[in-house]
Length: 396
Image 1 (cartoon, rainbow, N blue to C red):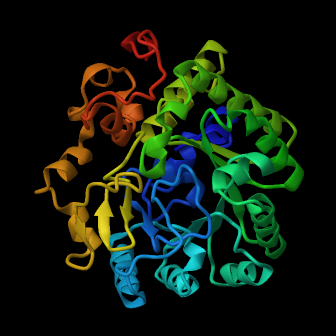
Image 2 (image 1 turned 180 degrees about the vertical axis):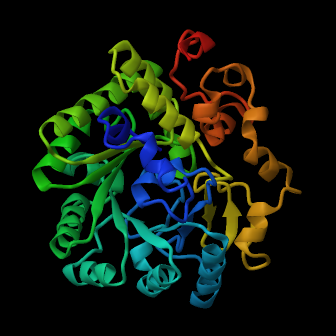
């Protein structure tokens, strides 16, 4: 997760994170990515059921849930363990988490245990009453997935009217004072929508957007050919940086992040260096604090059946199940070779990743993409768009 607005527009400085000792339990949410302890943000896919059928769904959600989904009581036990372990955030996802009848009760309990509770949703089920309920339990944030304006989004979501319903959900959140933002997955079929998404942020007063690079997992595995080329990715990242700066210069406070391609960090720094930006060295320090990809360390996933994964995309490999052992035990158990390697993955990456000047900042990028394309977990991430010259140690 690369905070474009934080880094390029200077809304965060290294001293902001250092003031809190860089400990997850103390850091406000906007600084959590700069923690030193990297207590895991946990994505809990509470159900596989969803009212839409998105073409890039990593969970391969379906109309009905699975019979083996964790019960409410099992969910409470999971939350108790995560809270005791010091996991700072529990992100409720799916499928569509709002399909699950006890979601509000589970989120309320997580908040009562001192965790930040957030949801990732398609937004179509957020009525005014549901928004008030979510605000009332102390939910920190609602991330609504939009993949373009009406025509494009509805095609991606597999349902006409999905865009209008999602926008209604966003407005319901805004009306009750519940923080809400957008999630957008970039690919060739919707990259042209990014300027319109920025227009939407400005018009509707939406304070946050996360632009996700495509990960080849779930139904997204069928979209490898729809991923951007390296040159197209560079143009898109530049566009996101430019539009973020435009908003900042207008005095419009929008948090803009890119997610799931940690080459964005070095790319941003190198651009600032070329521009002679005096903040470039501060940004480099913040990127070092961020540490890049943290699958299996700073982020983890619990599936609807209790299986524990390195992140929400790595669903084909489970480290264990919370029905048999607590998440905290599974997460700390280095007798599993892959878990041990992910805790120190910079020692295991191969090829250009191993010799890259930015390895400490990128963290080796996404292992799931490398495995999906090459069959080798430790091969270079094929979505890294930095040139051989840019990864040279002379750029440090």
